[in-house]
Image (cartoon, rainbow over all chains, first blue to last red):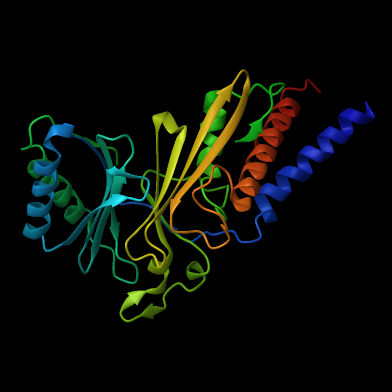
Length: 138
Length: 153
């Protein structure tokens, strides 16, 4: 019985430590995406997909950077920035791009309508590439 | 490869996915599981919200995007181009062996977490071993809590 009580006590203690003060450098400084999409491409159409992303960026005043991930020359990350909004993401599986839309820190949040419009435009641009699917997660 | 759930606990896939989302990167608050495409700002830059450097918020010097795939069993942390040590990446994958669960952490590129002393090694970084240890304690604590809840008092 004493063993069970010890286990219960240890469990509670662990819970308090973990959920309370267990992390000496807890980092609460994070930012949820305002919108989140997953784009699946046909790997044979990758360059066309990147071309469409660049067209979308240019049409909406974003500076775009597309580069390989450090883990592989076949996986990429995308970063688009403008004064009020950031669009950033990377590949998970080879053919899937996980992309989030964010407000720029220290700037007033952009209205939902602006994000909705950007998501719709991005969908229009990239689905012009054959074999592309566009999933809105958020 | 670090053990995060022992055979005797027989954690479910859902429990491990949930725990991995709470222990995705060092310093994460476990009360806040990583949301889809969450952007985080790692220490020490996260300590200076609202301060700008050459017109850019200082936090962006430690900006990382985290997202999960493979049903939540694989989380990926990727530095943004504004990160002071871009580019770098840390992948964490949960794997089941028998009824036990392990997490494999693999870092590539530059060291994007400041306490992460070794990259390009499988679980070489002590800081992620600590994260895995916390994840294991969390899963054990949750099981004990559920066991207590199930007691008929």
